[in-house]
Image (cartoon, rainbow over all chains, first blue to last red; front, side):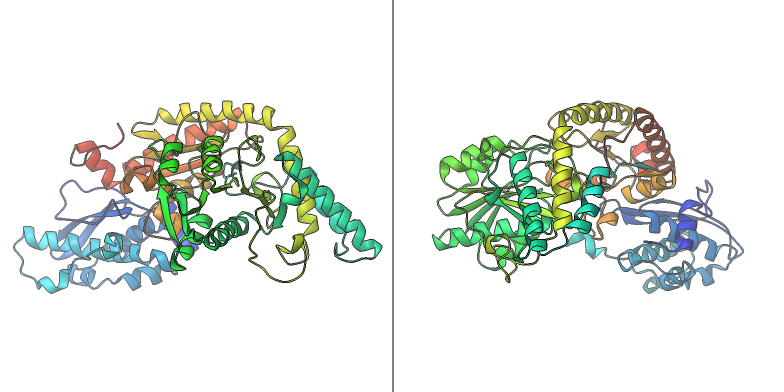
Length: 141
Length: 395
């Protein structure tokens, strides 16, 4: 099989699918030319992610990694969410095919982009090094 | 399951299966052996060669059995290149939307010092004969244009291109893998010098195909060894596969008119149904296309998730999205037709067989409509299209 049972499960029954109208932070990463875009919405109170939703344009693993990432950060502190790595998402999904790893990178970046948006909106200082953007070099070859 | 991926492969017909097993059972001898068990196998081999030759108006001696379409394509290109280079001709003309068996073999020839011109296709996925004519030079060794495209199903003006090549004295090869058994082929009337076909695209077995080469076109070997196939393709012949292929091609050609008309009607019903989905587009000429091919783009969604969700609903389809190709780029065929990357990612190919019913078509239209709506609902790209932040490409 192309994907693990867990990937299929999160693809078919995505957790936290949707939007948050009054989100405290919104992050969008990827580009349509590459074939995947993830948009993540965070609701934050007292430094805790109380709610998270996502919308994704992309393949099965893009939807599954977004879903898994939202599950892994929900109820966590913002600081904890920032430590979420793409490898952790891949492991939680019982692996991804090699050419789909970039989907997990996007999921990690979507979380970070949403947190950065929250920091920006609330004037919270941060180290820009933490939020390096992917140059998406694969598509610009 | 509603199997709508017949351009990828077809199930073997009952006749093809019966002949395959029967040949394996009764004619297991080596056709090169001089004893009786070898000679009865040799007779079966010749009979299959005759039947296949007759179906494309060729001579049995012009038929070389291969392991399939890819091998036939590779050998045809290598042959054209080798014959040309002997006369100092090292230029090859092909098109941008050929199968990878052609495009990747051409890449290798380029590394070996050949020059390749890939002719554009129009927005409807059809090659213009005048473009092929214009690309032919004094030093052109070979022209290779596919008979019908494997993704968008468009049928190419092969007879016209054949006439141009014959007039200019250039060898002409066509990859007829998608056409054989589905469209009439006459290598003489169409001035085809070399032609590739593959059994598993017309309900024959996998792992067997044909390279037709007109008499006088001396094939260059890909595989050296014994004297099988007039010394042009070594290896003990896959007789069950070859006999089964001959039976499958006979069957397909006998029913071509009836099945073609039936599938064309279903195809057009499917196209009409999918056209009702907003911001969708049929890829490829609506008329000059294979009876069983439907290829659509849906804006705002990605093809792999579409086909996985269709699979969940019992519909087997295919897509030209990057994610299904294992590369970062979507289908080179759709890109060659001028479809932008972001739209090409949302492509869906449905290829029919005579087993498909009208009820299957109607279920497919309903399911595709629902799945596209769901994926658009969760797509940030669709959200931007609807808000006008991003411009629709398909109106």
